Amino acid sequence: MAKRYRVTLTAEERGDLKGLIGSGKGAARKLAHARILLQADEAEGGPGRTDAGIAEALNVDVRTVERVRQRFVEQGIEAALVPKPTDRVYARLLDGEQEARLIALACSEPPGGKPRWTLRLLADRMVELDYAETVSYETVRRTLKKTSSSPTSARCGSSRPRPRPSS
Image 1 (cartoon, rainbow, N blue to C red):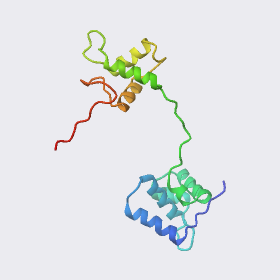
Image 2 (cartoon, one colour; image 1 turned 90 degrees about the vertical axis):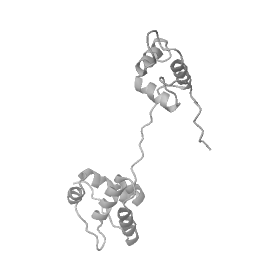
Image 3 (cartoon, rainbow, N blue to C red; image 1 turned 120 degrees about the horizontal axis):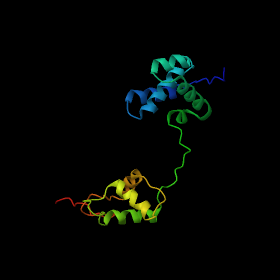
Image 4 (cartoon, one colour; image 1 turned 30 degrees about the vertical axis):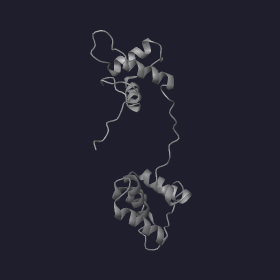
């Protein structure tokens, strides 16, 4: 069996966790991790339950309980409560010049016989014009959403005027 991490909470930590759970406010994962720590507490007066018992009682996986215990022992209570930051870095699908060309294309007249641009039409035209090697319609949607532009709106551009509140 792998090394077991023993959770021993101070009275202050126990009180903080109970307060966090009692308030009911916060991310579900954070609250679940707080419940795991309280159930795993081996200090005097703590339940000191097994990983399997905690997993069954809280409806989580045993591996989740193991990871929370480990992070508490190695990194402290804050690290055990908040999700681990991701190491993934996503490359940009379109650079600034390609985004500008996409917006200009969306603001231009749609191809013959079409009443308006669709996301798929825009994606296909971007590839036809060699603006991008490949581009999905989802990338087109995200880019236009990010710039507040829409291929179906009457007005195009990356900075449409916002309606003013009436006084």
